[in-house]
Image: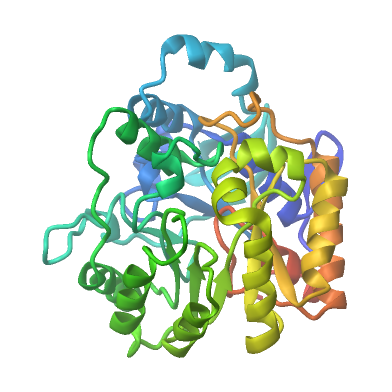
Length: 402
């Protein structure tokens, strides 16, 4: 198994991914100049850059400097607010040009050389209606095209966004200024983006995500139109992130139209923290409705067809462990999205956990996936989520490209 050394500690690729995603990376301009013409590397944070470690692990590449500049403008943060958290926003990681290669460092210490996915003009394109790909869809890793917010979030517009959500903060600001919410992306536009990604970018899997809605019905018309438009495509995975509906009939319809897995994400298991971090989910759709839909899905469509995202780093390990075990015992995959604190404080903090916390999470999820025979979606893994990386490490301990 390929390992990496930081300050005398030996890290697996998944552990290094946790540290890089949660801390961000300072990228030298020379790296952009050298690699942007030939690889997927763009200074615009909306392009969702990633790097590939020698072990094959896909890692979100957040250039902290450009990321914070973008968020400062988008969210109208004052300099005072940024300064308040300045001590928490530094990163020890950097990416520099070394003899024509991209070299990853921790402080002054070299860690490893990294690679990038091949160049595509995906982010320069628009649909036939004029909708830009950039800002509406992202390529993740080597096989995913994801839609981050296809319809607006009613929770955020009502003043109860999830604290960690960039899009939710934007919707909340629009509502506070009495401005109209952006229209939902049309099924035709979504289909054009997916088909282009499949034909030209190697995508074989799709994530469909939107804002949370009060009863799950207002988003159903959008989801159904997307599924019908994609029905004839040959996708390996079609993941739906949905608001848990009151009636299970919608779940049945989603699967009949090609959905392979459905998520009703809890994000945080600790009940008290959830009230502050995900207030809309607690008040409007409730934890119980999330669990009802997850359990129904796993029972009817099979173990592993339902999953719930946890934002790793927002709660104590013991409460996360309780929630992950609860789900896994019922055939529901607990998925693991690494918290990216830069730009969005949660519970008045932008400090990520230390390495030992991530190691405990990785060991726990690895054990649960093995014990309950739960295999997360995808082949190569997602930029921020690490569940597939954990599963690969547990099952092969090796580079997926070997």
